Structures are given as C-alpha cells and as structure tokens.
Amino acid sequence: MKQRLRRQRRPSTLEWKWTPVFCVLSFILLAAGCGGKSAVPRASRPKMPERGLAVMGYSIQIGAFSNPDNAIRLTKILEDNGLSAYYFVRKTGTYKVRFGDFPSKEAARRKAETVRAAGIIDEYYLVSPHDYAAVKQRKYGRSYLRNEIVETARRFIGLPYQWGGSSPDDGFDCSGLTMAVYRINGLNLPRMSKEQYRAGIPIKKGQLKSGDLVFFATSGGKRVSHVGIYTGDNKFIHAPGKGRRICAASLSKKYFKTRYAGARTYLR
Image (cartoon, rainbow, N blue to C red; front, side):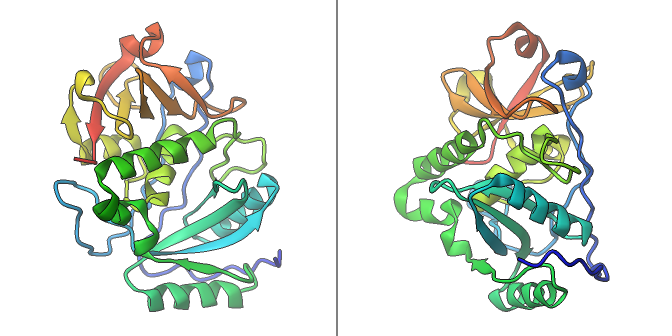
C-alpha cells in the first residue's frame, strides 16, 4: 500500500471530519460522554420494514492486515483526506478498513478510483448491499441480524480501537463503536449518541434483546452521553475510553444502573 498522501478537494456533499472523544473507564472521564460530528450520508434509500434506519449502499473496503496498527494508519490517512473511515476485525482475525456509502456500484467504483489515483490506496473491494446481514436476515430471519451484530461487537473486545486519533494507543468513543458495528452489518446508524437515541424505537429495559442499544447520562442530568450494545444477560459491550480496551459491562453495576437513560431498538 502506498503511503504517499495527496490532499483531495473535499466532495460537494458535506462530510464531517470526525473528532475523537476519548472516554476513560474511570468514571470521571466517562462522564465527559461520547459524541462527534455526524457523517451520515444523505443518500436516499429504502428503509427496512418497521425500522428507522436505511440499509447501507455500496462501500469501499481495503486491506487484509494481520497487524491492527496498519489498519489504524490507513484509517488515519483516509480521515486526513476527508473520508469517513473505520477499521474492524473479521472472523478470520484479519483487519480491514471501510469507508463510504454509495447508491450504486458505479458511484463507489468512481470514488475508489479517485482515491487510488491520489496514491492513497492500491487494491480495493466493493461491498455490495447484498453482503450485509441486514439484507441477509430477510432470508435467515430477524434473529440472524441480532446475532451478527452481537458477534461483530464481540470481535472488538480487547481492541484499543482508534477513531481518527494520532497513534495506535488512542481509544475511540462509544458512539463510534456502535456506529461501526451497525454499519458493518448494513444499517446506517448515525454518528452521535444523541442522534442514535433519537433514531431508535423506545423500549423498556425488560424488552431488551441482543443487538439493541443502551444509553446512559454520564454527564449529569438527563442528556444522553454514552452508549453500548446489549448482548443479553443484562450485559453490554462499550468503549470505556482512552487507555482502556473495548469491554463488556453489566447494567446491574451501580454506576451504569444510576445513569441509565433508556434503550432503543432498530431491529423489530
């Protein structure tokens, strides 16, 4: 992969450059909350039945790295060139990077070729909407999508996941994790925790199912500032912050129990 950078003109459609907000597992920094600029494309797409989230279009995927540091560096390069990118780990244990949400295969290819011509990437793969669990669940059932979301989230456990930071030691904020997990599975979840809260269907704690999102008011008051992915058995996966790795936590823990702000589902 070439490491030569060349700044591109930003596309006419506004793309926010995500600002990393590092939440620390210590409750002081967790109280700072999670957020960031929204990078949700405005492309018009059909919504899944009974869900407020649109299915992702084509995206561009690069790399098959054995070392996460390489995926982190590529993510940072793409971010520096105005592209909303994230990296993740596959079932095979390799790390890949994705960016973009395009209405057609040709639109995705044009963008990929532009990025390649700029010397930022070499080979790439176009991810089709048919590859997403959100689409496959029509064949395999709704529990399939929930299971895939949870399994995707679990593969992040232990990673010092980086979201637009400056080094492999940086963490990334909670809403970045939930957004990445949902988009990998084909659902266009917004970027900020408060936007994610508004986009979902309110449910009671007793109605929680695997794959739903749980929200917390960690900054005082009732303002949503933290989010995690519910995995069943009163547990959830979240990004606690800089210096800590993505981990599982319990809703029964006093800190989260007293700051619980509600739950949302997108998977009915």
